[in-house]
Length: 311
Image (cartoon, rainbow, N blue to C red):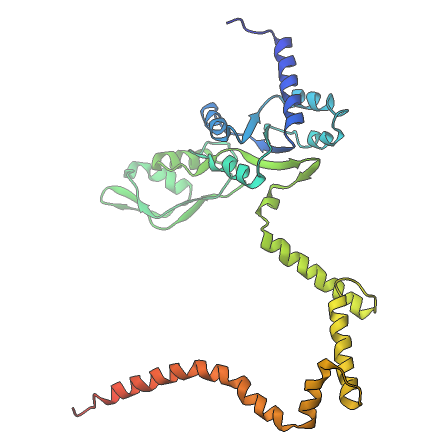
């Protein structure tokens, strides 16, 4: 097989990237730090059919996008996020499902000196397989220990590394001796491009219920303001109609004006005894629910009475 020259390879890469930009309206911008080639192959295999992963030098990706801006000016938003070690995941499927597949493929990794810790690491209290000659590692890290049956025992949980800090040589050595792989590495989603809009990945965590609740809060605020300034809107119209109906009932109650909806009100006002008759009926339902519970309680009391102190 003849290896293609650099110019041909670049030309093919530009063509592939521009074709993907035309074909797919949605792009995940992912950070690929600490992701090995074997893990990358597994990620590509799992996403096959749903998404396409493309990596490359940042300068080449920027050049290809700039040359394609005449066809799609919205792609200019991608130029600002091509920083550090990133790649593109192209898809036309549901963003949440593809996001889950991207984040699912993670592999455990040992702590390396000088690397930034993505998460905090706590060493649990335990009897280690290490002998007394390794005590100096624990003393240097101020970890309380004692010798238990010839092995070093950690007396309490210790937060060895905090998220965002660089891993020291002593911390990395100790974790490796204990066989602890505290970190997991995989693709990290930094931004989402959706048909011209640039989104944060957290937006995919918003549920339909949250959207509905937020929308209804806005509707309630609009209705409140509209009622306060006497400016009718679609949101305030139901409240205005109900308030108008209440005023009509109030007028009908003190005048001879009659309409169908006011008849029942006038009957109650003409005969106040109906209020007393209606009250027990309204309370009957809760009382009926409480009655079985009371019956069970009385039965339990009868059972207790069956076993007296002097039986």
